[in-house]
Amino acid sequence: MKWETVIPAQTGTSFKLDKKDRLKVIDLEGGQVADLLAFNSGDYRESLSTAATIDCNGSIHIRPGDHLYSNRYNPLLLLAEDTAGAHDLLHPPCSPAMFRAQYGIDREHPSCYHNFLQVLRKYGLDESSIGPPFNIFMNTNLSEAGRVEVKEPLSGPGDYIVLEAQKDLLVAVTACSVEESACNAYKCTSIGLEIC
Image (cartoon, rainbow, N blue to C red; front, top):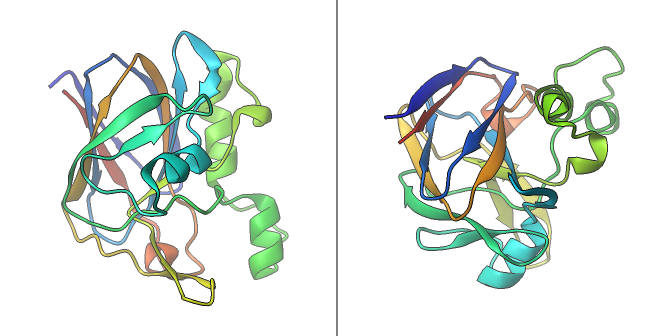
């Protein structure tokens, strides 16, 4: 193992992944979403695109053997292992605007958006770099009528995914800050990371 850490609830971190490194994202207590962004280390203008990922895989769901693609339609990460089985490619990171619109919260509230901003600033990235993330462990259902419903994550304590870098990457991961809905089973907990 090259590196491991724990992301405390409602915070985030960023780090470099070398090509072929394997990143293990672990739901330590169960029911916790982790938002992930990825950028080409050689050119930060190339970044994770959930839209291109849906387009290339032909599905709003990602399964082992599928790739996460960039805005240039290049594979960035391979989903190598998955013990949870439900993840989201549709939702933006939680933000002050979302908390205001969805829950009427005007006070200061931790958010994935601000956590991404904080951990990516040291690489010279700003808010223009924060697009829709890969929402690991987020359980999103789409009805035949097209209605989107977020249910409690299927992940239990110790469930994980393994992502293999397809090129050198800058990665940011947050432990999602939404405690007001089923998104994180109405409480926020920590996320484990391992690189090998």
